[in-house]
Amino acid sequence: MQTLSYKIEAHNGLHARPCVSIIALSRSTGCSILLSCNGNEAAAQNPIDLMALGGPDAETNYRLRLRGRMKNP
Image 1 (tube, rainbow, N blue to C red):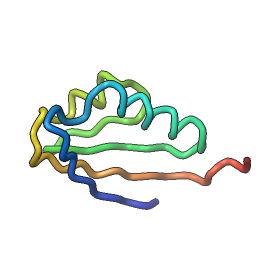
Image 2 (cartoon, rainbow, N blue to C red):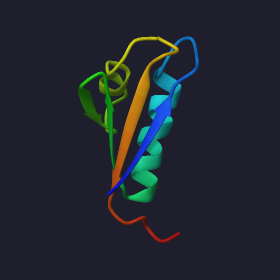
Image 3 (cartoon, rainbow, N blue to C red):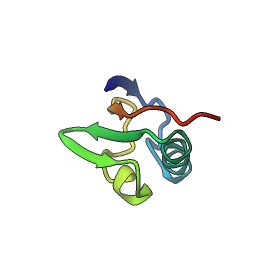
């Protein structure tokens, strides 16, 4: 498992378009992606769950955990 930390600097935080991109990445690579923020966690399967993790705050930090092997192209 690999863990990455990101600070979202966009004033509107993690919104629908990036959430859908994260879900598409999870599906295309075959990896399981779990995001956590402010003590809450959500799997990269539903954009609403991802957007509910944190508010639109430039100080919001997200942690991503990736598990699994990437699919061969």
